[in-house]
Length: 258
Image 1 (cartoon, helix red, strand yellow):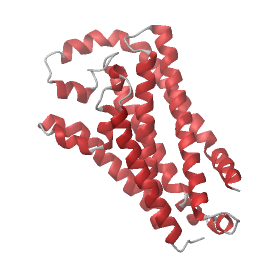
Image 2 (tube, rainbow, N blue to C red):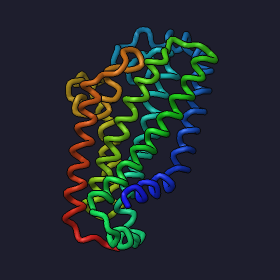
Image 3 (cartoon, rainbow, N blue to C red):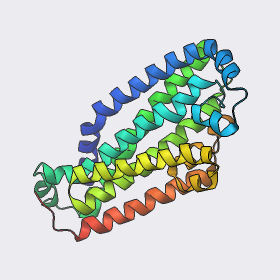
């Protein structure tokens, strides 16, 4: 039954994941196509800026401003938004739609229901990230850039783990409350606060406090240039794992609606 639940979850999320992945891939492809013509202009504008301000505008990564905006703003926001929406509706959405009784009546534990939901979200995020990486890799081959296939893969992997962490947070809130609106608004608010703290605190000379933000562990090690940062990925994995444990415990103890 858990395999059937996973298959159902994947079918439910397939179209949204493919569309988002293709949109990000197309955006990334054309962004890299025009990045070369803007690199020198942006470099001239930002050469005297402090390093923290260059990081804020995304001009200090291989490939320059356009690539920086793609990896530090457009792609992570899209992935996190998708993760929050998917996580908040995975369990709580079933209660809202009055379909939870059909799931809970089957010969399968609540833990397996939640695990199937979580795996479906995770695989859909993998698909989105993979399509995004393909778009960047194809553009790199077509137009050439300072980016390397390994750097692109590392950057995409860090963004994937960021999305997984916020999906788990949204899933936990939804499992605890049974209210998708509360789950999405709370998890979305946490994501926005985390993004702003990571972006703004270094500008105020408070860069150490930015290390409390999950965004720091996705972007702070400059994976496009330096490759995978396993300790940073470990932090994101730990955050997601804690949220999943909370989700399981909350889901098992609640009186379910619908």
